[in-house]
Image (cartoon, rainbow, N blue to C red; front, side):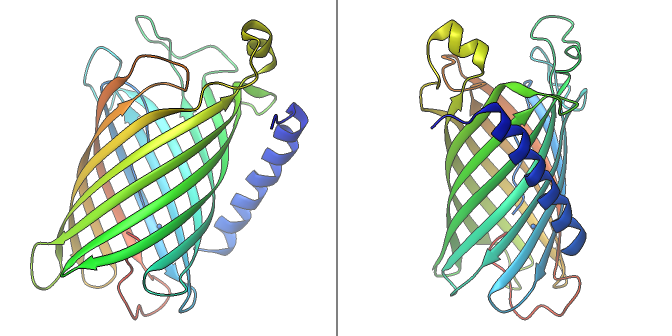
Length: 284
């Protein structure tokens, strides 16, 4: 199915409006985002608020920086600003279903030395994204195992939202498996391993369609993200995560070459700040 340009403009504005309304009226799973360069830094604040016994609100605010392609100065370039909002339905202790929206602002740079920012209006890309997650939680003795299948619908716009990006839309499917090992009996210290595989297909812009004769890119595996974390739990309200991610990725479907980068991660998660939490969530 091809998405006409006017659908991107009208639909994207509607999704942005919904995102900010949810941020206003509600008070988070945090994963490092792809950015660029050989090394990057990601930090995020998450707020998990229990709305009822079966509903959870998860809000994340993220910030990222990255190096140039030829160095590992992970804080050199501005990378990402991210807001996401999940509403998670938990019918039982094993199955969880997330209905989500998000906004991403990603800066772009020249591929050639000195890697300066691109020219207006493509210095950064606005992205609005509805997405869904199906989560299955299981236990192997005291080890938690979490399977997450996710679909992303990514709508891209130039920096002043006056037009669509050179690639206006991407569909992406993702599968992640997480293993959480308690390091102490009081469950205050955890070692966490995540591995996520991502695949995608792009809808081409009008110019690319004319040049290639195709409306869509190939559907391909685009990334693998392998992460390890140390988590420290403070009381029953705050988790602090410190980790590193190995990322094997290509810029977009249809590009042959893969890149390798490393991402340092620091996250703070505040759990149930507006009410007494009755049980530990398995969604983080």
